[in-house]
Image (cartoon, rainbow, N blue to C red; front, side, top):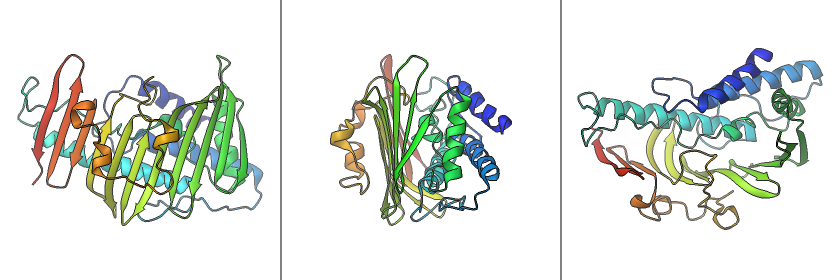
Amino acid sequence: MKKFLAMILIIAMALSLLTACKGNTASLGDLIGDALKEAANEAEAANDNGNNGSGGNNNVISGKASSYSQAYEQINAIQNAIGSTLDAINEKHNENLEYGDPEYTGLVSFYFCLFSMDLAFTATLNEDPSAISGVKMAYSFFGLDAEIDHPKANEYIISYKTEEGDSKTEECKFDPSTGSLSFVSKKNGEINYFFEFVNLGGDKYAFQTNAERSVLTYKNGTLLNFAYSTYNINEWSEDKPYDYAKASIYPNGSGTDINWVFADGVESYRTAYNYDGNTLKIDTNSDWGDGTHVVINVK
């Protein structure tokens, strides 16, 4: 297990250095999720309590998940589809372009859209006690004495103290009626990050974090369309444009559509992408220039 947990640390360090994941067939979420699954498997072998739980590794990629861990697998599969589909389109577009060309979008990568390192550490949570033990072991690898409460089915509360003495609480929820997931992180009682994944039915899904919004259609492993906007570069940015108490979409995703994603206008976001299967529109806005505004014809 040490080998797999060490992998998590390496990935965490690499994330601060990487600006793209082009060409990778496995995302960071894949690697972290695999490491946590290994930890959970070892915890199950050690406990050998015969409880198989409801989570498992069923590789859910379409339809409705049946546990928190399956919803995470679905999130990860969708993230991979976003990255592989749109990066391939973008790479082809830039084959004969050079940096400085107004149509050049070679610095754009889609692999970090909707990726959360904090969420990834909870990847294997489900009703199996050994899965919960595996997540706790992963936190302990970083010197965090985490307690995981399981107040009721499909709800998990992770609590620990940071090295700086701050109290952290991570509230993880899964709604079996919709197949939706919610992750809310609190620092000293105040929400500092949240991640919501909502199954809208009909192969449509909505995502929301502190600064990101997205709606998409994903069917049988294929990304059919994708609308996305973000204000921030990553999940650790101090800005929190969306107030969880007012903006939460969990568990039903009421009001989530393309107008919701781009409610403030594409010029207001750091990044906005709109892929409809025929075109990919890329809008990036910079504090140091005009940004990038390109429409790529896919077909």
